[in-house]
Image 1 (cartoon, helix red, strand yellow):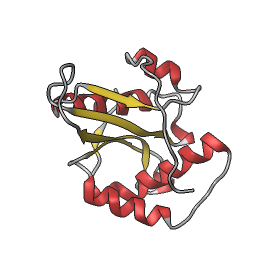
Image 2 (image 1 turned 90 degrees about the vertical axis):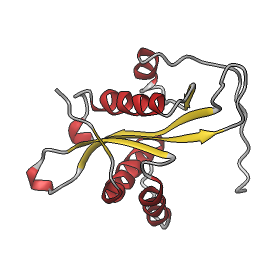
Image 3 (image 1 turned 90 degrees about the horizontal axis):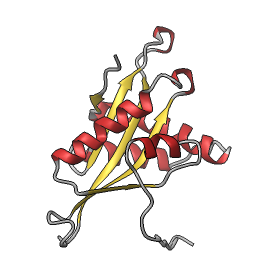
Image 4 (image 1 turned 135 degrees about the vertical axis):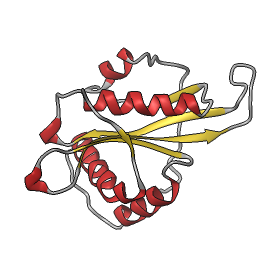
Length: 156
């Protein structure tokens, strides 16, 4: 049995470490930087409120206390609509398993815990962007494609 737990503020550095691994896996580049400190501060401040996160603790004693996996998502309050009477939406943006722990079901377990948290918050729709490697997991959890989404990178 896999034991997940809600992330605590003191888990922020490990959540950011896993986030960095996720980005490296996605684009093949390890890009440390000042973003990590800012991400830790945001995670500490927002965990349990608008930021939901569930983790699995690592079991490698040689590494000291660390996280094996996490799933992190954001709760958004939008204007209610006929199909979404609460106006509460979720967005999953960080699911990662440390390479030492892959293939054990940790991504599924943490994501299921996060989806349960969203449901308890009255969320009526959860969105995410999936890599090709993770698409099967999300489809197995019930995610489907919906209307075309467009975005604009205003940082350029």
